[in-house]
Length: 635
Ligand code: WT7
Image (tube, rainbow, N blue to C red; front, side):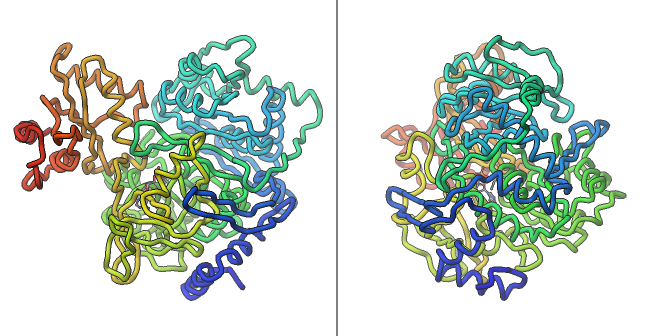
């Protein structure tokens, strides 16, 4: 069976084959990768435990697929082009050969510092090439990386390090992001007060801000590299991994207070990210691919590092932010590096739209051939702006729906091959079987319908467990509906059978494309000394997609309402990180609760959205008067 997808007809044929013969389909895709030993069985699965095993018995190392196998043909091709935060600083290019050597070198550094296969290593770094090198070096020696986004607080880092018992941390002295300098090592020092499992910290020099270096524990990246250089042998043979060995943990928010460590494994994740990258973006040899995500999130893992590199692509990585030094920064980067593919987030587009067309005018965007969107629903206005002003109506836009848990893109157009439709993720990729269900788990068939989005058959990139707590994985994703993976998203399927993701149906917010649990933010607000209780909901926000609206019971304030609001914001920043700061805080005398004490979020959501005309049934409320007060006090 020919699995090449070059036309809509090919798509339909391959899709049908993938449903009729899933194991043969995935074996065909997996055959295009390099294995030390091929699998004994393509798939073993049940969604009840759940137990999902892809390519069982196969042996590989993902870095041999991302690096070694390209050396002969693409050794001198750029693997990573790095654009610094400050446009005055030189950009850097790492060819596949250079990246391979640096990964081997740093893998040896890790080994010298006691790291072994199966160890968990926390990475807290800015968007510099060394972040990709650190990630790949872990994979090289079979250590499990847990990258924590640079915007998380010391407390959040400590929680994640403890949950996975990490033995080693890789960080930098400081980081540059726009006009700000972030004290990375100092944040790590605060976190490590609570992390006895950490024996070593390796610190990359980036800002050369003063940092404390603790004897026996902390070492500079550059010094450690020198040590392995003087030892001679720069090579580091890749550790042989089972297909189902853990590759990494990535923490993500859910509807409970505590983030979950989503676990991905070596073989399936490699096959899935490589397959989706090659197909969705229709990557052609020599193209420059630019994804604006941070490696601290799944998009960066799958579509800056592993997917592009396994396909021998040139991945452009950017340290800074789209609005610094001005709102033309992304367009300058596209122009300078002649980027052919641009993959970004609706929130970035909406924020740039706010600056008008001046920052775009005069920029040479003629290199662009394909555009992509990820992380949240893209509104039609942003879609058209992207199409008109960035793609000049000649670049297909792939609106890619997926999740940390899915490992890679699930529902999306295939660039230039399948149709696009503004606001729609359109059709499932071959190998993916979506299904819509009602609250009782009954399938909603036919078109022009909506329901809860589930997936009914495994795919290689899916999560295998949540670290240290398999039961949590089962209850969160596999227990809501029997024999289905539940995404947590609402979805409509239009008359043509095209999918449009309408947003979360659980207590999860999507703020600027970042996932936040309402319970998590509430816990942080409740840490403030004067707060008695709180309820957090999302509301439509012009740029962020969703904003954080907090209803807070705080009868005794220290100072004014305004200063107390600022204290609460600071508390959330310290507990979770600046990304979770509430946009609006309304002080209330009580929360609307049922007689059994459950907060009626439905009512609060409506008030936050400004839709107070019909709040639905409030007769079960303990104290209906509180609703009137909250309505009147709305910000
Ligand atoms: C949630 C997953 C996908 C990687 C980055 C975010 C929302 C994601 C889309 C899209 C509408 C989208 C969903 C999903 N989402 N992509 N194209 N259209 N919604 O990963 O943090 O795991 O969040 O983001 O609600 O469940 P994540």
